[in-house]
Image 1: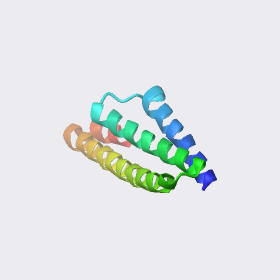
Image 2: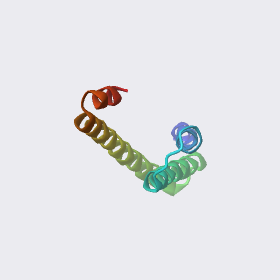
Image 3: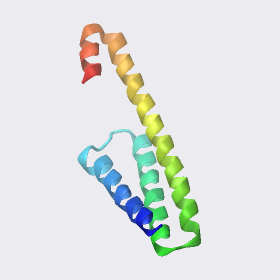
Length: 98
């Protein structure tokens, strides 16, 4: 459990670095959802490393939140790609590929 907790903390830091420093988003709902996922992962990881009773529960909630967040991001990326392709024709098709 301690290894999984350490990985949770490391990935929370990695997601925060990617989402807020390397490629910051301009959407407030996206930033809030990413912050929530990072906080849940970090909190669950700390709980697992510390051996707290609530650590496993919080880590499970964090995993489900991360899965839902990832699914929503993938759906929105596919929708934006389809929008570009449909509205802008051949130019949009090239942009969708990129």
